[in-house]
Image (tube, rainbow, N blue to C red; front, top):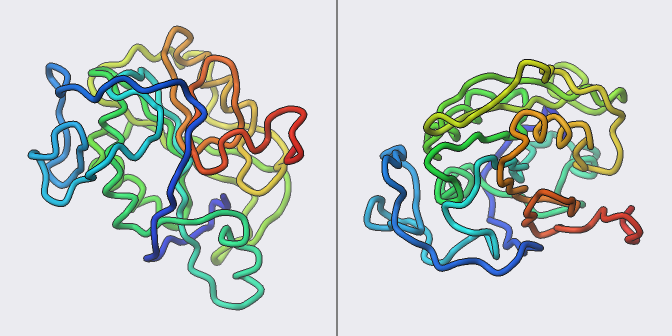
Length: 236
């Protein structure tokens, strides 16, 4: 997504998964801490209005050391031309409330890192989302797409990402830069370099790719468009 996207209210998108069969959701892990305004399917009694069904397909609850997520932020457009360049012609988007209600902490082990793709005009909201999900913001980086896009106030050539944690995951970022240099490809398709760096950051982690579009070794993928850009597929 453009780093100058702007989220607005709308309906949630049902998602599918390309991961293996899920295990039965269990109890909260020892030491698990989630924001009081968050959401949990595993322990719905912790919150009001939590999900009544597991929203992440075949991804396994409380199993992942590293989660990468590409939230379906909604653009606020100011013209018909902007509407045609936004995400809606490509995929369904989510409202702020639906994003906040995602029980992302239910995917995480007690010590887990989160890589979240974000949008520049809503960085304050993105950091709030991390907190509501039960993660602590740590740092940020950007993807230089090497091609100009649309934007708010400024033209977009980058997309930010946020790194967060819950507990104390073993992250080795000594040789991981906070800038990714890779040309943009299809709409919202993420750079291969991001996955290389994430694997370098946590080489032994069990990894989930939430709202993924490409299946890849070492990652369990889930999303409406999971596998869309698989090698040899028509979408590539």
